Each structure stands twice: as structure tokens, then as C-alpha cells.
Image (tube, rainbow, N blue to C red; front, side, top):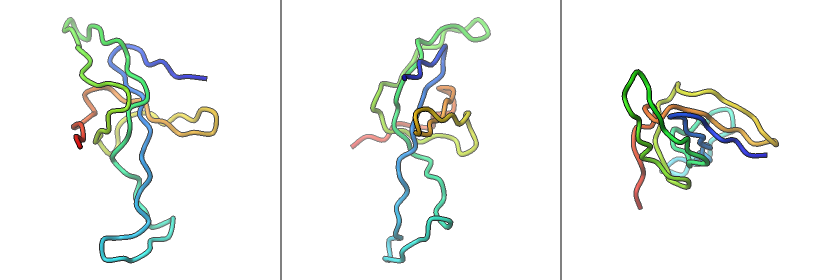
Amino acid sequence: MKIRPLGDRVVIKRLEAEATTKSGIVLPGSAKEKPEIAQVVAVGPGGYVDGKEIKMELQVNDKVFFSKYSGNEVKLDGEEYLIVKQDDILGIVED
């Protein structure tokens, strides 16, 4: 199955958090924070919100930072995804 977002929504999947700190300390699973960086899985078509045209600036496979408490978590085929508005994306990570 696939998720096809509507309007100005974006489907993202969190990237795995690092299991060790920079100093080499191994973190147990309960001590890890959920990462605020994700990969874009699907992008909606854009549209109009409050009479303003919303142009989608993201593409599938972009790595992005997103607001910590944004979006709705969904589970599909054993995978966890977040559906967020494009406004909740803070920036694109460029290599």
C-alpha cells in the first residue's frame, strides 16, 4: 500500500537516531530521542489554503528537518510515518 497525501501535506519517515554519542557512549533504546530529521516519502499536489496558492517545494527522497511536535503519526504495513503540512518542514538537508 502507498500513502498519497492531499493538498499541502507531506509524508515523511523518521531516520534512525544514532545509538552512540560523539564521545562514544552507547545509548539504550529508552534514552534515545526521536530524531527530528526525516526522509520525504510522498508529496501532495499543493493547492489553495485560505485563498492563497501553495506551491510544493519538496521532492521525494529529500532529507528534511521538521517541527518536533508536528504532524500525525500513522502506521502502514509495519512502518511508521508522519503526515505533516509543508509549513511544518523547517529546512532541507543538502549534502
